Image 1 (tube, rainbow, N blue to C red):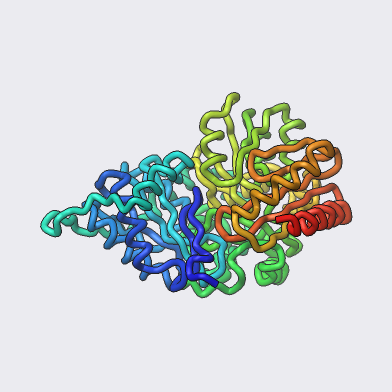
Image 2 (cartoon, rainbow, N blue to C red):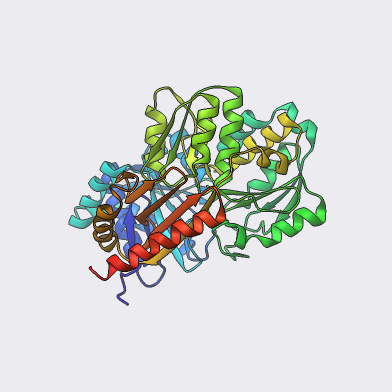
Length: 457
């Protein structure tokens, strides 16, 4: 394998395996390009709890100093708190060292604009032009800025969350909540947030040491411990965050994971029960959101995969969007900040429980239900695009075809989607239907077509 085989640079930032494709030298160079792009000024530098984070954040700091920026060290910080703080402090931008849901050996850099948003495709292209040309605005050492350390980095986001969700209705219920932070970036803030909402907290893996107790992607098969804790302690609900705390998985009061696809569905239905407005989600999110939008008489807009794509549509949607997100457990509450935020997701779901005075399982049973199966094959983005061009000819007369992001084909009773990943050198394959058998059949058919067409490449 080539050393750069795992390096992935996209609108989701840069990710790679530490010591192979992602090195301190590369991190410093990427930071030099970003510091040049934003034109100097204060730039927040934070990280998730991975052991490699301190090394890479120091390299980022060095790169920023060399081009005249003032690095502001915010330490281990949930990514939604980081995004909120970037805008609140009127910083020039931010670089977060995190690989989100990727395994421990991975890490990465996420680049944030002064508005507290990820760089959009055009901004990413402009930034990468600087990086590829090595056109850095180096500053003489005599003009280097001092590094500022901010110890209270999570407070601004926490206060906004409590203003939004700290209602008497939630506090009166005194929910018992099991929270699994997987020793990630959410660990310092999540138990505190829940306690200040009046919850009794059952903490699991709430030390921000980066020693993941399970795979960081909060899928049902990865979270048995919190399921067991909910049952053994009689908790009302269980929550699981991913490594940088922008995604949330939910466990019902019986200790059953509801599937991360339903996190956004639960939140959306609750928000729409209080006020009307559009929903924005990505192309791979469950069809249950279409059903919710139809039942509530509102519009649903779908975008390319990638948080910034959802956010930009959410900010421009007409009628105004009141909720958005991605079907991987990423909920965007624009009243907090336009970003995926596991804390906002917890607040909205606790509000829904308090308002309905029904257990999670009852709320979930009343939702539209589909079965979404996700799979993957090894392959570069170039290989994915060549494969999609062949598959398009096969499917363009079979269903409703979208080429917005890869190839998605909608049928009356199911849909399929194939696209290159933004974060890993893989090709993602998805199928959703009303039943597990239907989803498995759709996925098997798609994989069969892929196998046939791969031989033509």
